[in-house]
Every structure is written in structure tokens, then in C-alpha cells.
Image (cartoon, rainbow, N blue to C red):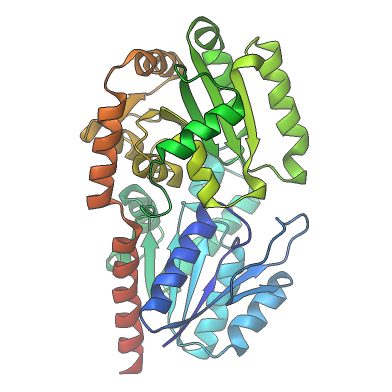
Length: 385
């Protein structure tokens, strides 16, 4: 069997999308399937060499040509954004081969919730039409949380094609390394006895600024440090420096460390996790109901409890609270209180060990990859009848 995966981001770019795609690719290949990953060329892309089987194309026309002329039995397209995967879907339908939509986030629901587009913006409605066509034309729709599945079902006539294939993480990539963590603390100039709270992942400007402002007084008073490990390319360089300026004006520059993760891989990222005591996971307004950031699972495998913020009854709250894997609030006042509670908790290590134990049972990405493989094989089998 031959599979093409169309993804807006892929190695050597880092991030949740690249990690999910690469994990699927490697798992499929271990099970005898030939896989090629297609992603668009873009300016200022992270330097580095992608593994074998990764291909870059130019623009939407390039996506269509790659999907239409390639020798594949099935195409899987990730979203958001959906635009390039939608082009690959059209090519798949013209070739009469199956297509699987893989939803990491609910595209237009996210854009509207984050205020990227207003509810009546014609562009948003154009994207919603694209979503409806894509989900109904797809042979299967993978979603990473149940709430995303419910959102996708609003666009989908056949609800049975929606399948939960959660993100999870890799327990081999992310596991606590006390020796590396101690060395990393020393290199960062953080005292051994201090508590370190880490924020890792995407650059979410508004929420990072607000979080710094909310936690500044507590950081000043307590034996605590903030560690930001953020992927910031040339496009984000100015905002990255602005964030450092907010830290300086808040009076916590000496107790805050910034690391740009754009220049290293997941192994080194794990060292920073190992240097930390708990993870910070405040969701932006508009994402608090459906989102579980991939770093959440990475934190769990690295034995890090979480201080999170989101909507009551949302996916993140259910994840943290149901098994007692951290501290959760629904607003910034509560987040600040839970942060202080975490700093003074004598159960952080115990919670962290529990988090990894539960993650091994529930959130090993291999479980989800197997579920995706079975579904893809079934789709191809049905198309051959």
C-alpha cells in the first residue's frame, strides 16, 4: 500500500503538526506501507534536512499536481489550515482513490473563536463551505478530541465517518532525565532549590503577555522561575523581543529564561522539561472548549503536573481534573491562585509520576497510530471492492 500525507507543516519544521505527521509516517512504514509526506515550500523555514520521504511543492497548483500524478492508494490530508489538503482531496476524487481528513483543530471554529475573522466575514463563510465539502467528500474524518468530532459533525451528513484518533505523545522521546535536567538548570543559571514553571510550544502573543502580567508578583515573592521554550522564527522575532521587554518591565527578568526552540529537536526539548517542576497550559479564549495542546501529553510523559486554564467542562479540564494530574482554573484570577498552589505543593513529584503512568496507558501515540492504520486499510479495502 502507498499513502500520501499532505500537511501544511512537516520536518524539518517543528511543532505539533510535524510531530503527528512524522509519527504516522514512521508507524505506517514499520507496518510495510510506503509513505510520502508533501508540504508547501515557505520563506524563512527552519533550516535542516528532512528525513527521506519528505517532499516540498510550490503553491496550491503544486499540491494538486503532486496529488493527481502521484502513485498512491490513499491520500491523508491534515488541517488546519485546510486549503492545501482540500486541493489534494479534489485530486483524490478525480482519481477515484480514498481520502482521509485529519483534523488537529476545528478550522473555522478556531478562526472565529480567536477573532481572526468576524462571524459575518465572507472569507470565513467561504472557508466554512470548503469545510462542509471536505468533510462530506472525505471517506474518513479523523479528529483528535471528542469535542472537535462534535464540531465537525455539524458539517457532516454521515456522522459515522468521524473517528477519534487522539494526539498523545511518544514516551521514548519524552521521559524525565534527572541528570540532563540538573545540567540544564545549571546552564540556565537556575538554583537547585527553585521551582521552575515551563511554557513550551507555539507563540500565542496575547496570552503570553497576560500570563506574565498575572504571575509577575508571585514570581517576585516566591523562589520561582519562569522558563519559556518557544519556537520563534524571523517572522516572530520582533514579538519575541517585545515579550522580553514585558518581562523586564514586570521586574522579573532575573527570574525568567527565554529559549528559542527553532534550532533544536525534540531530544533537547525534553532536557528543558526535565529541568522543570510543572508545565503551564493556559488556553487562549476561543480554544478552551475543544483543545488539548500536544505539549500537554509531552508534559505528562516528562512527569510534569500541569497548571492549566480553559473552559469549564472543556477537554483540558476533563483531562487534568479527572485523574488529578495538575491544577485547573477557568479564568486568570484562578490561574494565578493555582500557580501559587502548585509552587507550594509537596505532591508535584507524586503527581508527575502518576501522570506518566496514566499517559503510558492512555496517551501513547502508537495506540492512535494503530487505530489510524486499521481505518486506512479498511478504507482502501472497501474502495477495491
